[in-house]
Length: 152
Image (cartoon, one colour):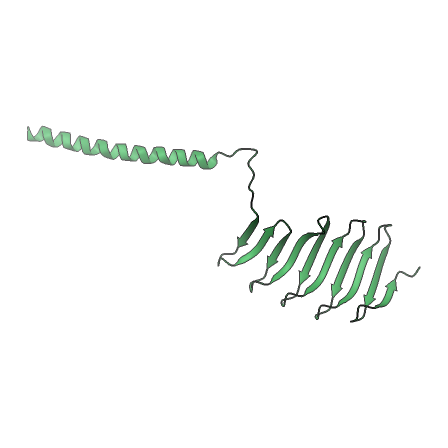
């Protein structure tokens, strides 16, 4: 009789183990199915998205106005933005956060590249006017034109 009781206890123990394994396997299948299922019209919405590097430092910030790229010291070095809501612009900045160069397309089809010196003063402008003609300007530290081209 003891042998029969021992055998029944082993079978009950084995049955409990199989039941636990079955529940865990079922939960794993449900979790995998839920993770794999996506709706084709799914949208992710957020006011701000921050992307971090492996050390958890913020390297990119995206919001409704711009995408800003940060260097290892946390200084914004490049910005992509829609100036005035309709004019795309890329701005490069110095390590001390001064604008260095900007490329933009204005609403009137003017395309312009502005370059500044290390102190942040505008020094050179290159562009294509709305008529498709190229132009350039060199500027002094006061922002006054030193040279304009092409000559008309």
